[in-house]
Image (cartoon, rainbow, N blue to C red; front, side, top):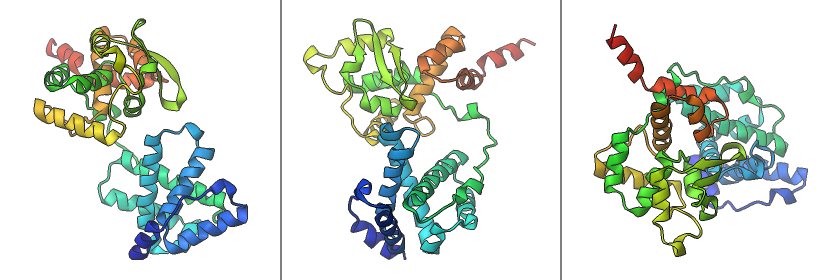
Length: 317
């Protein structure tokens, strides 16, 4: 079955799902299931996500890539057990998938991300007419017993300084956009000079949920952007279009600077921004504004992340 799946995937092509009638849509999907055509099923899920997902046509490429990966992982588990089970309300199949991930000691967060991707596949299968109920609706999410703030690994001020010491011009910008601007990966990749107003010292960022907000520039970030020659201030601010390239770049910088990368990665720069700003101001509302959090409850996690004040208080008892 696995060999057939790989062979079918290699023969897959782009489908124009909008042009299919309901009957054609169902036939193409059933054929893909029978032949183990993983790529067609991934395309079906991607199309359905763009049509009916919460982000609609504005769903980020980062999100789409994660869903495609999750769909492929689920199909690699499910198809060898019989394609017919994917057309049935088979909770043994879906719960079995979750339990297998748990036995493999996959983190609860990753399990729930995989569950979301697999559930998107089932939504697409219902839209295609080969399924009428979602077995994942009765498949519980993985429970995470660890406190939220223990997962917020952040680079320290000293780490940021060490990274800047070994960084070139674009790497310098990358670090400051993350650690001072608080930009997410997708925002780093898509940032253009049109979004940067050096005179007002702000950036216009469209982030999660297509929400647009002004992000104020730090002195260091503003100066670094101004150092870029005027003729080069067109198009994208950073030269990397692929998130993987940014990860490799930061990993290399961490190695050169003697800074731990493994548990922080690129998003650790954004965490550093929140923790440093909270440490400096002590005001979670200022931090929430700069980080563009939809809820102050998200910002409170960073207040719990740094135990410095707690340990200082207890040391004086």
